Structure formats: C-alpha cells, structure tokens
Image (cartoon, rainbow, N blue to C red; front, side):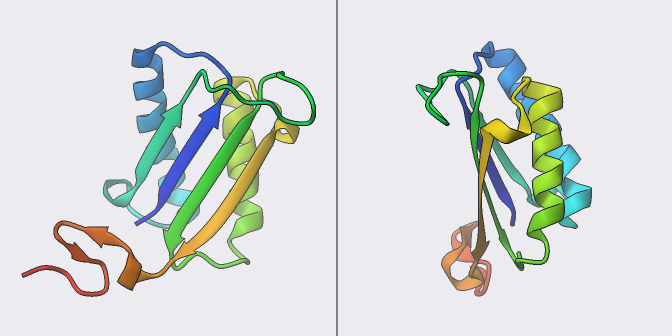
Length: 119
C-alpha cells in the first residue's frame, strides 16, 4: 500500500494536478514493485513553501509503503527527482524526500488493517 504525496509551490490548475497524480501512481508502480491499484498518489500544488532560503520551485515528497527498506530508497530517490524535474520543473536539488516504511498493523484500508482485513 504505497502512498506518495508531493507538496509543491508550483501552481497547477486542478485538472493538471489530477492528471499528474494519476501519472505519478502509474509511473511509480514499476520502481516500487506494487500494482497501480494499490498506490495512493497525492499532488498538492501552489503551497506556501520555501526551501534553501528561496521561494524558487521546490517540493516536499513523502513516500510511505509496507515493505519499504533503506536499500530501496536510493533508486526511488532517482525516480522521484526525475519526476519532479520532468513533470513539475522542480530541480532534483530542490526536492526533499521523506521515506517511511509502514507497519501493516498500523495501515488501514476497507474497514480493517492490512495485517488483519475486515471480514
């Protein structure tokens, strides 16, 4: 159950943000090794965000997933940096990424947790 959220100071119209969230989920499926129908992708454009002492285009990215390991993070950082540059015009150096492994017992979906699905 990967969740990726990009908060950025880049402005996007709502239709573009919606399309970009779908593209992000589709593009992430291969590098994270999970089917797209398990991925939650969120794009929050137009945020009041300052990074490295400027208000230049920047992004804060959170990527959470069950089974995520420190060994997975370098390749995922490359993927995210390239996505930021290609799709948002945010230089990879202006993107800060927070990776978090999720515990199945503390991840809920469909009225249950991933560790103990509802009947």
